[in-house]
Length: 354
Image 1 (spheres, rainbow, N blue to C red):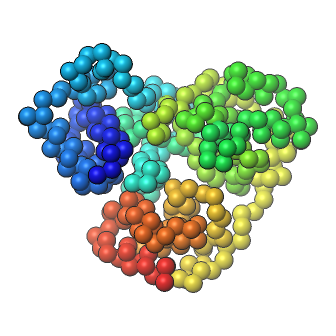
Image 2: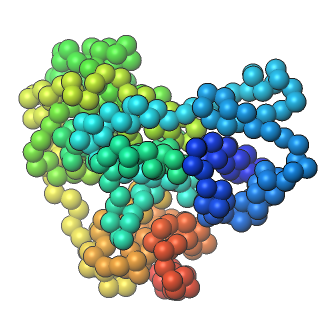
Image 3: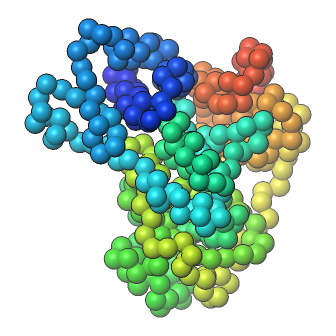
């Protein structure tokens, strides 16, 4: 049994079980789907066993496992809690949030109902998903009236998106824009600090810019392409914090928009046919996470779950994933879990790897 995975599953159990209307049958089913039946069964046995002798005490609104050593319990690091009040600001601003949850690989996928993305537009809806253990919510910037700069730090490539963004501004004659004077010092009106120490900058923007783009290492523009994590969320145990007010996000300066329009008005790559007959499949690029590849497959698909799974398998294969990894990743998706004929998923994947 994987000790790290067990510890993570226990933390998730404590958070979900601390809710006032917690349903343990649902929680253990979720743990089995996310972490495996062996881990779920172990937690179920130890947490519900009357001889276990351990108690859970509420700390900061989240139930945490208590020990006989009071000092140890008090000094134990606490996992960041999602900020409900911050997430409510998005809903109140008319921004639709998409709930996500991690698969067994740790990558997040967007939740769907009846084949359509779930988009939360009410406070009761937000409360429902939080109570069901969802910690990370995302949104599509264009739909919310924003264009966002995603400045990464502490990712695997080692890039410092903030420093690289300053270099890009200087190279393009934009370094004098006051908004960017001291990003780490809070000079920007509306932004989030990310789980990895990066920044998401929010600009008000409308128009028909078509996609997202990377303009420098660690610097992505997100508009009508990839989603972005909402402030108040927690990802992999680390919080996203919103600074400033959503309704006070600045309008994107004209000189900056002019520069970006030359990048963001480019047409997406031409789509080419694939051997398994999907004429909508776009040319694959390496460097995306499996979560992003799965989302691309969902967006490209014009059919039901069978077609989506073929798309997923094709993208994962071309990105270098083994057949075994692809099976594990796709089996964790709602497209597979919602199928009656689950063996067909394996058949689809194997047909792509022939």
